[in-house]
Amino acid sequence: MNKIKNIFQNSPISPLFIAESITKHATKTEIGAHQIFLGQIRADETDNKKVKAIEYTAYEDVALTQMATIREEIFAKYNLTCMHIYHSLGIVNAGEICLFVFTSSKHRNEATLACNEVVKRIKKELPIWGREIFEDETHQWKINQ
Image (cartoon, rainbow, N blue to C red; front, side, top):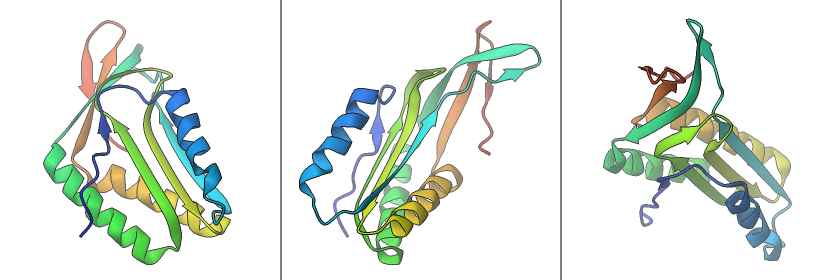
């Protein structure tokens, strides 16, 4: 099994970091397609209260072990060149990016299918929780859709 990669960072994911990640792949000329998913915090309204941020927590050891398994299964299923995953922990404000999934392959279809499946599995299988913080400082736990 490969070394377990840490997908977590204690901050929102910056647009500059995303751009730099894409730029690093310019030398990998066997790649013909990238698929990127960016999860952004919405200012949802519930009971006339607007979400101003989400605070993410995770059972990190379990999440990273499960992510390593998902990574292996995705690489076995799709012909990918590479896959990068970053998920925020801590407070991420409305409008900021909390999840960045980046898959690359020779052809578009493999990158697209793999990216969609990874996002679905992260939301369904990893022990990551989001506490929605409203403008009035009250909160509720987020249900993944």
